[in-house]
Image: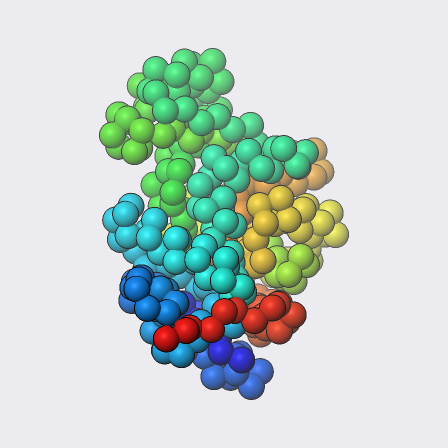
Length: 302
């Protein structure tokens, strides 16, 4: 099979996926979406590096090259064009768009009837300030998150309307979520890795502060994942439509769990240190099974 691996950064993850693909008998082409071109007027207009004679059978997404809004839009358009041509893309661009946009994720999780902390999204500071005045107070904050963001970057606790930044500082979108403290006072939440519809690994994330992301100093700890947590993570991944994902959960204070986020390009280096499952191998198995079961993409016609 003709397989591409789109990985612009993250050497550890890229190497794990490369090794897993090769162990499965596939020699992938490593490329960046930033190097894909559209050339009309002769044959297939989508030109993917490393595939001069035909489109790939499948593309495994690890990262999308960073850039301007226009560049990101083009790269997502490339993925949509690959899917339209019959190429298996994990994760699919529609799933990436839903999960990158936290408002869309929250909407889909709520529509699916899954538990999630109360969430509000506004474009105007006045509306956000009125919400904060009604719902927050010292000791009971809301969490302000960037609409597009990951690894705990840009988070803030909001207790008073005056704590809100200006509209320009949040790209004119206020995504606010109720902060759910633990009764025992620990800063702890959970990450579940879901692949091909099944929760295959999980961990506790514990921090010295309220932001527990491993990238920000959180500690990965082994976790005997309850079946209820696994099923909730699987349902959340299905609601967003991701093929593989990292689903973040928090305890709801009543013996259950709530969904915080669904990540379509999750890191798992911390998780891999505390679980026995070979996560890269699991992702590759699911991806190759999907690619083998799909109809072949159209060939380039000169």
